[in-house]
Amino acid sequence: MTNQRDEKLCRHLFEEFSRRFSLSPLKIWCPDNDPNEANNSRIDLAVKTDKELFAIELTSVGPYSGFERDANLSGEVEKRLDRLELGISANEHVSICLPICWGDEITVSRLSRHLSDLMPGVLEELRGQQAIGGQQKTAKRRLEKLTVQFFLVERGFRNKSTFVKLLVDCDLELEKQRLSRFASKLPSKAQKLHNWKARKAKTLLILEDRDLQISNEALVASAVHCAFSNLNLDPDYILYLDASYSDKWTILPILLNGVWDSGLYDCENLQRFWHIKPLVD
Image 1 (cartoon, one colour):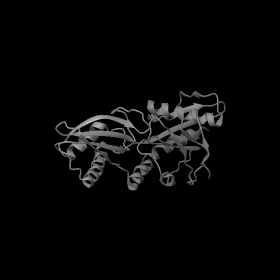
Image 2 (cartoon, rainbow, N blue to C red):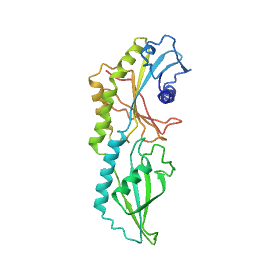
Image 3 (cartoon, rainbow, N blue to C red):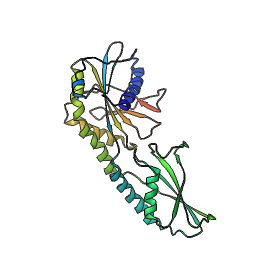
Image 4 (cartoon, rainbow, N blue to C red):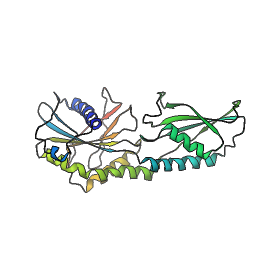
């Protein structure tokens, strides 16, 4: 059976898609003779409009494993702490603010342990965390662009405060590696989409990046183009979903020729919704 989270996300995105193209009414289509059901690989969502059938498949790429991500994060933090040469004394209160992009499994407590290992003998008290924009987040939720404040206190004195800002960035090579992982997941989607195209369904492929905030559109376009270049995969529509902010969805269309459409369309539930076009030959 399909993943409930994937199905819910596909339904939400297709509702926005259908509003853009004035497709109505909508209904979930659950055929008794689904050709994919026998292989336990049913399409994520099939919906019917008043005239057409749409088959929607979601391909998600999440963060690295906890071990890989923690090792990289620890190294980045260590390099920046080494440069700072804080020299904490008994009467200093040091607040370290860490704006950082991370994934589902990195939590505030794990990041706190990194700093504890790097700065032994200093008592760390996590007083709170605040997301950029002023919205409070809990440590167990997925936290991106989070401002974490660590109050490093020795002997209880707080009559002197020092504010230190550490910025841990994802380098370009890591971004390329993460994006290229779409290529390893897409072949399994090809046959499912072909099965539905044979049934005269329009196919919509959603590429969901759950890991990092994409700032380089050319890098995204080239990586996804590379992923499709050697695949016999021809969906009618592609959406690229940058889910680095859980409360701010950004949907970008990527054409196979790497051309971006900059027409902006404001939707009720989304911060940014870019005009969607069918793929071109």
